[in-house]
Figure 1 (cartoon, rainbow, N blue to C red):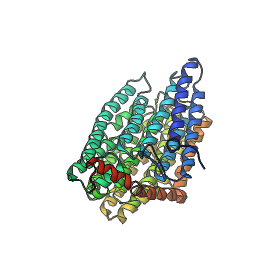
Figure 2 (cartoon, rainbow, N blue to C red):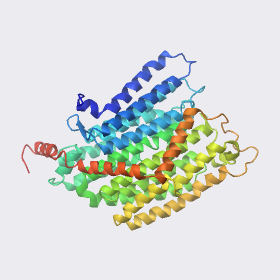
Figure 3 (cartoon, helix red, strand yellow):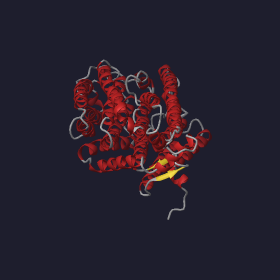
Figure 4 (cartoon, rainbow, N blue to C red):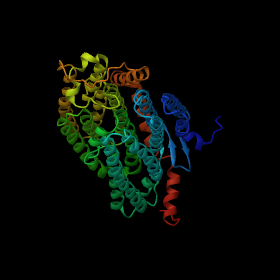
Length: 508
């Protein structure tokens, strides 16, 4: 029998990542400026692996409730823990050589990556909105700094400032939503909010609270019309940082949104489903049309991420369990192919990122055939070609929408997927087009290191397996969906007590 307290077991991965990040920060000033910071990167990788193993260990303990019911560790949160740990691991492996000879502050990058992961994991296992906010701020502060990590470039500073200012504005919406939810239901606990909606005398206030929360989280997932920061930040931030921020923080934000809508406000599903429906259509359409107009590859993938946020929001309209499973699956597939695509860009462009436009990728297959083939595979998956994770992810999402009766939403999604083919295939064709003498001159020619090769191989394998053998991940996401829906019933007594206390001790 385990002798550790639930408070330790419940946040074990977060503790490991925090201690590893602190250790990296303590050791970084000790190293002479001329020495490589790779050992600190390997320490961060070991800490991330340990956190992933701790999450896997939690999966076999059953649901854990810690810190007076504010933390719930179940299959749903563990799924996102493992996903975030995997993305962080691939990012760290792919960027071990990224700062060699260019930055003496690489240790800060490794520490910030770990601290950001702590916030993301805390978001996914929190069932109390104030705890969600704490996790959101830990994650956001880390990514704000990392967006401007190339201090000598003006675009990096611009990206960091824009991300910070607009992110702070979105955080205000999220906090106002929490305040209004407390005013309407007497609690900030997700379970207590669900219990209080049945007796609240201000249902319109409760829905306004949810709308403000969705606006705040919509910024984090780059959903239109809250997407204006995305292209500029993706263009100015370092490529490995973009790979991280386009996947892991979005996964955490979508996990929170799933918990809040499906577990906290299920009684208002007929209202918020319309709002989500509109956000999905706007995100898919604006994202794909915007990507069509781009020549800069990172800006194109930024608009692509907006469109993929729209595809994922389609799953929210398939209430209840089928929507959760579809959203979880699509989050995993998008994370695998997108972090892999940016890992390839990291290897091609290097620290200075002299390779930016689609024209710079012309004829790249002749110079870097393996990297070009891997990038082509990720692009095909982003399109949704069969035998890739992107195809199966879209298939599950659109099928769930059809089963829920949202046929027109699925049709709009399919039409947008057709539009997306144009800009993905434009880059794909550039890779294998005969190059002009001066094209792709800035491509880094050095060999891919073993850690970066492992990162690329893991991403490609995950993308392939999700498209060919999806049964294991389907089993996991179905269990995650079941645990997420069961979470509403487990703390009912505690939630009821909270509502009673807010009403002066009177039972309704």
